[in-house]
Image (cartoon, rainbow, N blue to C red; front, side, top):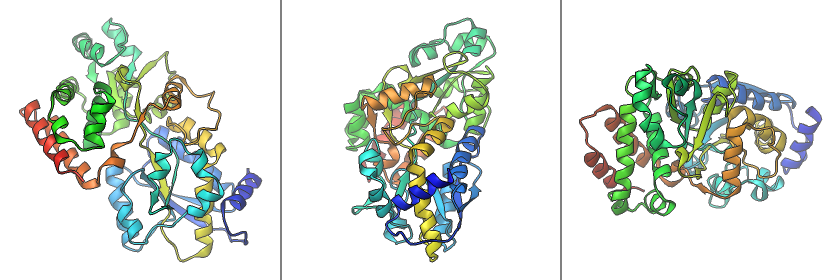
Length: 409
């Protein structure tokens, strides 16, 4: 592995001059059991070079970690590398010259030819220059269903969202919470987005999420989404947990029927020793629409004064996209690889479903790519208020949502 990594570094870096060993502090928010197992694969690969990975895990969600990460970079205390999501989160730091241009790494390793879908590399590109290394594709449009819970309720495992909602009374009678949902705002926002993708055709979804058409957001198609979101908040009453992985654990242990959540939930099922198709079922597009958004994670590299550190940053960038690391990391993470040329035949049933959808090209851009953080924050505040205050009507929340879309940038 050490020899392989050194060869990759030579191919990745434009300069062939010798460099010294370096320590890189790498910040991220991967702290659940499945996430920790996945990030350990990245650290192992980097430590097999002459360099050292110094883990900078930040407890909490991305919403907690991102402000800390950005504050450190802007405040002159940059880490060696940091996780962020694909999209527009790093625009201002790039414009300020605070993030390393890794175009040379991307060109030397042919990223334009291997990263799939190409929009992931586009999301790392500003004014023709590349500033991040994509590592995975995460999709949010899944519902995870507990076979144990539905056995308790004496009803079949649902095949789609409508069947799931129809099973709620039987689940409640069996002392099972129908829908597991953590109390963090981003989880409820994710559920709304998943319902929108599942219940809308792509033309309607794109009109709002790409073209920012407020009239469509206020129309009958979106009313169906908000009614489903209203159902979801009622189904989640009694799900008294905070973190997403705690909600996943309710499904794993049969205390909840299902969870609308991203494909990273797979990592928790794997750590618990559960088998897809036997202990749990996963339904992309909530069983309706076999299409996934292509959000995910990427690593950025804050500018440093030390040439050895910069060389190590570029070696890590190349390593993250390498075939071996892509396989090892994504099998543990539950996410899809950003390379279309690697063998994932050993992936479980759920990942195979995602790979099939990806291969068919049935993908949409993630919301982080389409909207600024300010717009995303407004949407998040609105969805959180609706979820927690049952006096807010579907008509009220939809009207406010359409207003946000009308003024979105």
